[in-house]
Length: 158
Image (tube, rainbow, N blue to C red):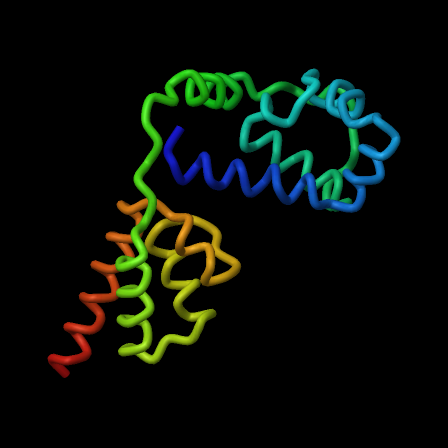
């Protein structure tokens, strides 16, 4: 599982745990049973990305709620293998990298929304606020910087 997939998976779990329907089910101590009936697991950490999306859609009311859904074995194996291979943690973006990203964005006249859209295109990671730039990996920060520098160079040539 790539680091972007891990981040996306964590974002899905966070969205599920912030959902009002989830909180209501959890208040009655029925969350494990809810997952068991639909996915055959007792915890969200065992679900694949596709199953997490399905669980979120059920909680949001976008998908019909059914029991006994078909397990995504390939996705679950990917999650399990990723948790077994936690040998190194990616280096986080430095403060100077984030400051340079903001400096380049200011040079280009990008507002917060424009910068977030650009960062999402470059890294394939969902961003909702600029503060999340401090949580990305150094490699993703480098991708963003290179992209912004190329745009600045292109605009300066014009």
